[in-house]
Image 1 (tube, rainbow, N blue to C red):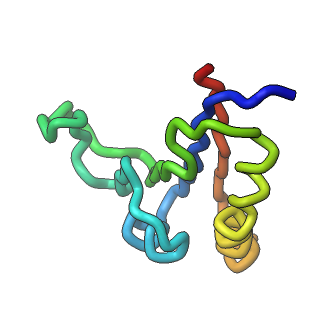
Image 2 (cartoon, rainbow, N blue to C red):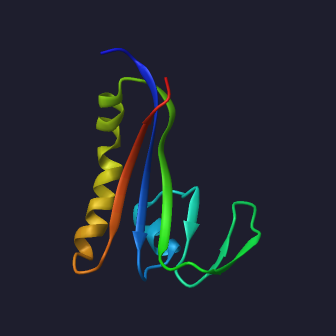
Length: 105
C-alpha cells in the first residue's frame, strides 16, 4: 500500500441541540456550525432566507495529510470515541454522524 494524501472530516446533525452544545461535547472547533432555527447564511455571512431545519457541525479531523490512511484513522480513534460517547449519552435522540474520507493524491 502506497502513501497518499487524504482528508478526514466528521459531520454531525441533530434536530434540536445547538451547534455550541455539539462543539463543547466533541471538544474541537468546527469549520461549519449552524443551529436549528437560526437564519441561513452563506460562508461569508450573507443571509440566504429561511432558517436552518436542523443543527449541523463539521470538524476537520485530518487536513491534507500525507501518509497511510489506516495509520491516520488509528490516530483518530480517541476523537471518534468522543462522538460515540455523545451518541450513547443521548441514544433516544436522533443523531446523524458521518465521517467523510477523501483521497487527494
